[in-house]
Amino acid sequence: MAGWLLLLIAGSLWASSCGESNRPTCGYPPQLWCSSKEIAQACQVEKHCTRLISNTPKADPVSISLYYESLCPGCREFLVLMLFPTWLMLGDIMNITLVPYGNAEEKKEATKWHFECQHGEEECLGNMIEACISHLYPNFDFLLIFCMESSTDVVTSLPLCLKLYAPNASLADINACVNGDLGNKLMHRNAELTRALKPHHEYVPWILINGEHSEKLQTQAQKSLFNLVCSLYKGDLPPACNRPKELSFLPFSPNQTFLRKSAPNLSEGEETVYQSAQGKAKETF
Image (cartoon, rainbow, N blue to C red; front, side, top):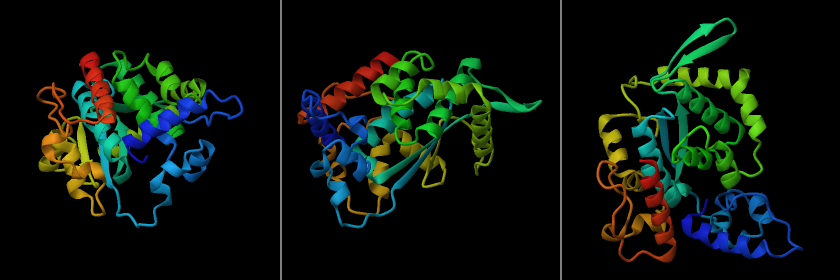
């Protein structure tokens, strides 16, 4: 992803190209158009994907690992209102790993594992759906999981989220994963990953930054993940990191107002992202 400004440019190109009968649609959502040269070529946006033609070596991205539960209010708040907006702005310099399990418990029954979740059976289902999505569709799993977690009903929102963000993905394949051995194995792996955390997790969301967890890093991530990612990246900072703090609508504190009521000096594109996130916040929480 080459940033949210690119998404807006690509979106307008997509809208115009859809009206040309002699030009087939590329089949990928705009968020993925600059994820590889092949997709950029298929969607005819190569000249807009500056990241793909840049010869400047990049530093290692900042790694964000989120151990969470699909129905945990605090987890949803962080994912929807902090992690996703930061990714929209800084996706080129960060990697995200999502591990849905949290405070669940598992025990072996016959040939399968049985899971009990903090928020009941529906949360276990939500965890497994999201685990299957990450396994089957790693290129756009975060978009789908964000869509689900920002919805009023996490589980039942899946079909609509697929239409919005992954129209070529198969609901049948996801359901087969959830109801079969694969989903069970994926959840067991998440249980093992969660138990292997050092230090052991004490609450959710449990956040690792570059593979490490501390109370200081957790607090910084929940207070201002945007600034934390910018401060940790060792390469040339993207333009978003160089915005004057007083003009930036990121970061914001999830413990205060979800998003600022006023955001002066925003460009049209920034205002669109701001209003979208604000609407999601009001609908969800």
